[in-house]
Length: 215
Image 1: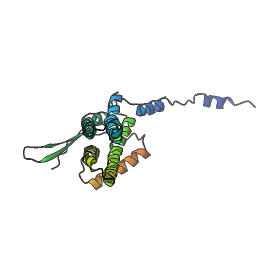
Image 2: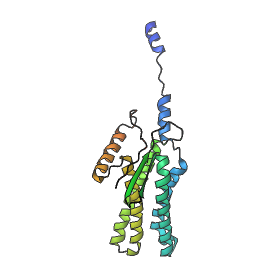
Image 3: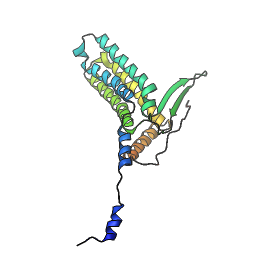
Image 4: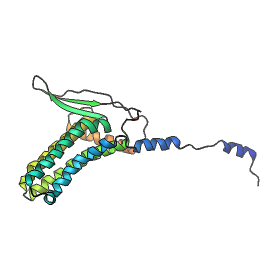
């Protein structure tokens, strides 16, 4: 049977355009700061690898100790001052004023549509590296303690301290400077779950530049 002309006319103008959705998905998956992303993982992963394999590389305890400590220090500085600003638009630091009081200062930039703005892929890599590596150093602490390799204990504690400090600072910064760690953890977990459940929410608010001082 012949198809009615009216049906043909109704369907002729129907078109599906997935271009915008594809471009949006590509922009979220794209790494816009490859060098920062590389060094965000390089120093911390290298410190773990050297620590695990130091007996294979060298018989010198002092040499391995200094190498790992330098890698941890480079990682702390680069994550705190460079990769956090580029990959998630956050920055934090702590300073002592003339009265000897400690101040936490947090900065967060607004979400930008510029070509240099961070992407969701970079944010996932940033937070994954920030959370997983302190857990690995914590596992090293217990393994060192139980195996009685006490000469490595100071180095492991340094690894936990430096990487946990960055994790704590960035979680505080993301949560707006909330100092109660239980509230910070609950808020961070709920926000992460919400963003995972609705990654394409167009109403996600941008982050404002902020400065919070806590004594």
